[in-house]
Image (cartoon, rainbow, N blue to C red; front, side):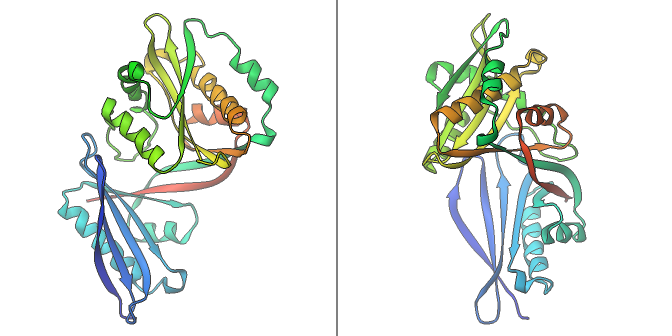
Length: 293
């Protein structure tokens, strides 16, 4: 089959990355596949690009994916990238394709879901009511309030040592502008960002947080984003405490929600144990691959 690869222009550019795109079409001009390369540009990740390839099932094993892959990898080299990562569901055609292309597996993630109808609300209320001397919980919707913004941005370093196994992910550098930009992006999609944070009562600084993104209509499933506690404040049960509060507020404020979704690296045994104890149920696994250029 004669395949044409056309480079496309993605007009959307964020402050932290831009995307390159390619469309594969057959002799008649019908689309048969596509590839996107997200090129990270923020400080700490200037070496990294993320690849996403899709080929119509009927057109697989005909060289379409390989042509798209080669175009994207060449572009990554031209962009001066050191590493290209790609994530696929374990056991799928994409999984086999990336292994055949010589990428190495660097991370395995387990996806889980908490069916809210099964949540033990009485137990959650008991948990959230347990005292944590020296700390209190606060929460807000959307962008962080101005008076909390500096300390909230500083608390994001809690994610710096998040288990990423062998992934050359770099370090995500956060400041107040980036925190606000992230909240703005969620709102622009018509979704609600809800944050629960732990505060050190000795100096009123935020020392941990958990984020939940709720669909705009308050129905279906919501998605957990980051959960982290600063290293110097770990060992006090703050991660579970914040997550329990987040679950309760989601259920009470959005009765149409059916479940809460999250994913965790298999090596992150601490967060996995929290999710297991709170009733999250595994749905599937994904695998992250990396190509070293």
